Image (cartoon, rainbow, N blue to C red; front, side):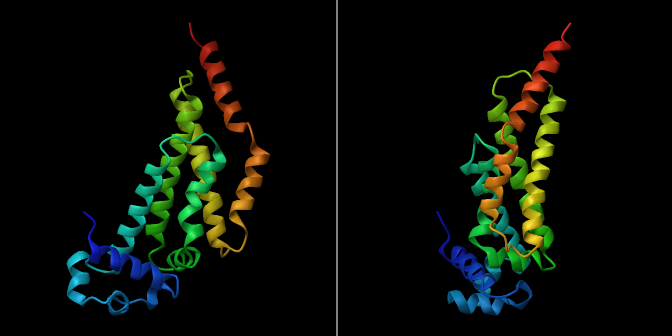
Length: 191
């Protein structure tokens, strides 16, 4: 059963985070925004970084659950930037705060899960080396993480969705070719 107060705190915090930097948000601001007392906040969260971490990790779990299988690298990339794109100012404020590491952990986790789902879908029942599978996943995870981090680092001014679409057009077939080569190498190395 959803906890109304806990959800109200999260919603108030995200609203405030979309309005101002993280370091300018206090527990008092949050409780005033959602109309509760400080004790109610501290019943659910020990402090603002704990609240932030719970929101980010909850979002990571939601995105990962939403994409159990992925059929294109573009879908991967769009899934990774979904929350950031929908909450640009909030993410910008988190990214430029002392709590950046919480968002980076979230981003890495989402990249790992989404890319692994993509690689598993793409490979299907093909026989490829485990080391190649891991290498392909690591490569695309770094691509997803790197593109998203660069977009954040540069202030999120570019149209990330358009950029992702274009890079996917340019790289079309690359992952499939990597898997094909791995399967070919695995077949050729069998005794």
